[in-house]
Amino acid sequence: MVSTSNRILDDIARLATDAAGAAQGVRREVETVVKTQIERLLRDMDVVTREEFEAVREMALLARDENEKLAARLAALEGKSAKD
Image (cartoon, rainbow, N blue to C red; front, side, top):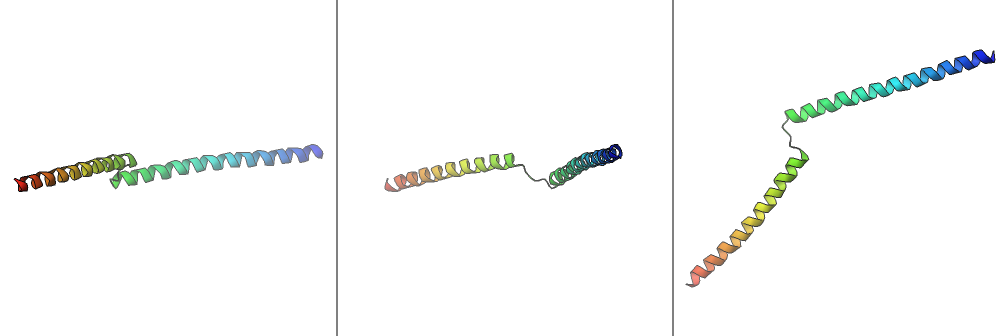
């Protein structure tokens, strides 16, 4: 009787372990499908990546600095020209 009880408990434990493994597999598969679909959606929407955004942002900041320097230089030259 004890042997039968242990075998039943072992079978239940094995089933629970198999079910947990199957659930993990399904979870991984669902995550992969969802991630693939989201990536495809974002690609179709033509959304920029973070790296692209940061690169363009840096270029804009450098261009703004250069523009400010040139504006100051132009103002100084115009002031010098007005004095002459």
